Structure formats: structure tokens, C-alpha cells
Picture (cartoon, rainbow, N blue to C red):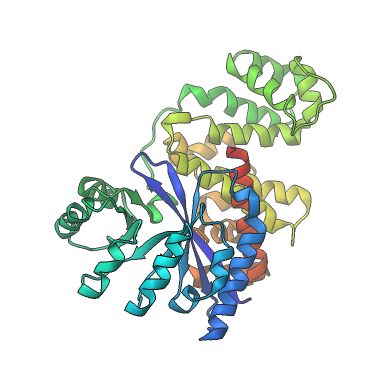
Length: 399
């Protein structure tokens, strides 16, 4: 299929994740299907979504918001999707299709109306809607706020889309929107230089020791200086996923079991996920999805060590926002190889296109997704599969 899946995270007022809006967009060079072909094309992509996410998607609490065309709305294929986890996003409906919406809602599907136009024909849809999308880009916020107040009496959740700047987010919060999506949450603005939070100090020191293949006693000494690091280390090596033969409570033994490569990866994950309440959940989740997606894409083109580099680049790509310091300062502390720094700073070098591709998948930039995928030599199917598998993997980690 010459179509790509792109996604945008949907967050609530506390910047916790509600779910992801998923779109199927055709590549620029592909001939868009029409009529029955459109239904077939969409159902094939949804089938892949259902197959790959399957029960794994149910491990999390997040929703998948899927855009449904009027032609696809009539397809019985929609009813194969799990209604507890799927929201059907609908726009441009004819009054004759209202009955079908009512039928789907009776089957347990939630409905999201995309920019509902005020008209008498659309009034019945308000009785069916669980969510309504509003495009807030360059809109009169006073008018939007009045619409939010008007709809509040119907207990419909309102989603502001194209929230691309902190100022727009603040205005939407003030207006009373319940949920938000847009480029701001994938590419937050950076920041002013400041001191590193002490919670990260030992982990960054350890990363540098591991990267330079320092002796085990030196690494052990830094771990012992932190109250929580030994506990986290033992929790990891004694977890079912690690597969240690017997419980380990010796730092030196744990380091020997892990090896430097796995230790570096574990510490990198710890830095991204250790901020807790100080970091919006969407940020850490986005970084994890990028990392996993990039590594999965690398299976088609790169050797194992290079795939590790892709994972680290994706993971560190939001570290400036997570640590609340500019990326040049982050890189000065971590001192990664130049090939990694070049990707993180400029989206250039051997890995620059891989990171740019993962970012493009987060924002509906199908032309950019297509250009970058073709430059790397990846098919639409490979890009879609890696993206969906990454979502499933992150949900499993959260579960």
C-alpha cells in the first residue's frame, strides 16, 4: 500500500495521554483510491492496525482515534475493531448516515465529530458525539470559548487540534477545552540554559563512564553514591524480562550480567523516564516511541550496533525538554559520538533522516514522511509496521 500512517498524541489538561489520532494518508506519487477502492485500501490498513496492535493495545488505557471516511463508515469491517479502545472520527456526513452513526454507537464505539458545522442537519449528531474536534489555529479564541461553554451542557469532550505553540495551549486551557493535540507536544520549544537537576547527575556521570569503557570499580563507586540507583539496578536484573538464573543483589555481579552495551541502554532509558511528575507523560512516551520506531526501522538497513545508535538518538531527541536545558548543553554533558550529536542537533549526518522520519510520523506530514522514507530506502509498509509495533511496545512497558 502506498499510504502512510501518521499519528498525533492527544493529551488531557494535566498532559496525561488520552490516546493517539491515527490517519492513513496516501503518498504523493500514489493514485488515491476512490469509491470501493477507497474502502478496500482503508480496510487493509485498519486490518494491519488490528493485527499488529491486537490484544497488546489493550494492555494500556489509551485510545486509538481513527479517521473514517463516509464510504468507510458504511463498511461492516469497522465492527471488527475493538470498540472499547477505538474512537471513530467522522466528518462531512450526510443526514442519511446519521442512522449508521447511531448503530455504531450502540455497538460501543465512541464517536468524535471533526469540526462540526453549526446547522440544523447536524443537531442530531450532538446527541451521538462523545468528542468534538476544533481547529484552533488562527481562530478567534473568544468565539471558541463561547462554543465550549455552549457545548459544556451536553457533556461532550472537546479536543483542540493544531495546538502548535505554548501560547495556543494556554489559550485553549483558558477556553475550557478538555483535550489537546498538535506539534507543541512532539516538538516543545526550548529553553534557557540552567543547571542540571541533581536527580540526573549520577546517571549522566555513569553514562559517560560506560561510554568510555571505564573499569567496573569506578562504575560501581558511582552507583553506590546514589540511594535509588542500586535498588533500580537490582529491580531490573531480577525482573522476569531480564532472565537472571537466580536473584542478584551484588552491584558488581549485576554489571557483569548486563555488560556495557545493555547497561548504557538501561541508563539512557532511566534518564528519560526518571523525572516522574516533573515531566509531562507525553514527553517521555514520545521519546520512547521514537527510539523504538527508529530501532525497528533500522532492522531493514543497518547492523546491530547502528540500530543501538538509532534507539539512543530517538530516546535523547527530547532530552533537552525533559531536562529543561538546551540540546547543546545536554550534548556537552553526555559527550556522545559526533555522528549521534549531528543527528540530535541538526537532523543531519548518517542518522539525521531516521530521526526526521520518526518526527514526521508524529504530525501528519505525509509528504515529508514519503520523501524521507524513500531517501532511506524504506517502504510505506515498513514505516507503518515499525510505528505500530513501537506503540505496542511502549504500551507494554507502561503496563
